[in-house]
Length: 130
Image (tube, rainbow, N blue to C red):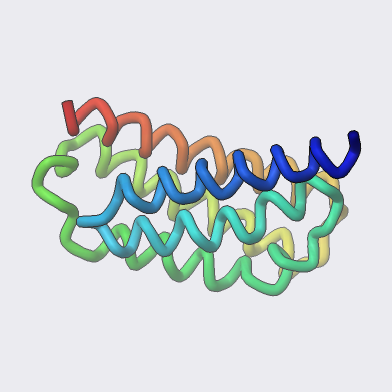
């Protein structure tokens, strides 16, 4: 039973990750951010902070790249631009916590903020696709 649940969870994760990446086919910087976030957030949910601790700077750099790179026209509006700036700010905070070697609870709390911010942007972009 446990193996079956793990298999189902893995299949859902692959499906969710694939959906997120396919959604941003025309926005490679956001697709890359999604990949890094998935590869670091999901292990952190299970208590493994090593991936985010080793890649927080990469996540922050990618958020900055999203902010300065051309945004696909269909997503380019003030609300999305504002949320991208928030994503940069929140990933910077996350990276700073990790650099300072803050407690795991503080890191996880901020990682959740980054994760939620990303999904807020993804939701806004989904509305723009309709």
